[in-house]
Length: 266
Image 1 (cartoon, one colour):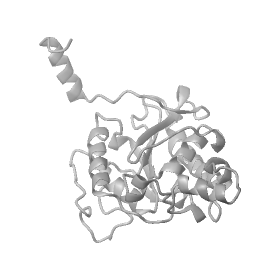
Image 2 (cartoon, helix red, strand yellow; image 1 turned 60 degrees about the vertical axis):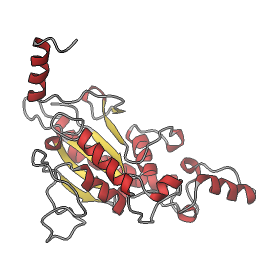
Image 3 (cartoon, helix red, strand yellow; image 1 turned 90 degrees about the vertical axis):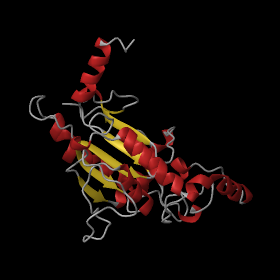
Image 4 (cartoon, one colour; image 1 turned 120 degrees about the vertical axis):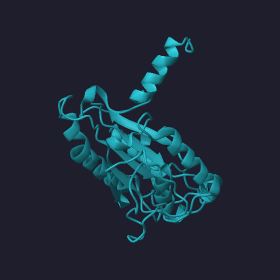
């Protein structure tokens, strides 16, 4: 049984992410290119012999914003439609979401404000460069969101509170039960997926390893995927998984072995 992981996935490209505008409560859709790239990410990283194994997923958390929900659809993690945000009478995914009968997960999907993007307040819809100029013109210190938060929006303490609540839920409800099991009891790893936004996921990663937001040095591109887990299979040792081995399915292993026998591999 592998150590449970938490995959953090930033929504795909939007017009505002392209221009650098801070997008909190504004419900901006993905661009056509953003949709295309998320589909490609799903094809590359999701599957029985890939990074994210659908049958090993225990729970999926998604932001209430359409850019995150559409990203979740396009990743094709194997959740049968309709999704919580879709019309219950719908029998198929909307807007061209593809299906793959070889993928399936029983993981429950929860839409939660705990992973909604940072509320930028007065800084909604403007860039960091514009914010710094505004502050300089007003005789204010330079701006650091991790230290200062956003006037009219959330402070770092506000963000820490809701992110810490979600991390605690993931650990106690989804990860700890699997870590406590013996190797022979269950091969399901209890993996969790969180689909959300740039700033909130960077804060989530820092709080996962119990660091103050002021130490944040992470960046996360639109459509990016990160992996969080634990060292020594110990719930008390949360860690960032910088690089992990992919699961190799039986058919892939047999193909590699056959190629080795034929001398195709060097």
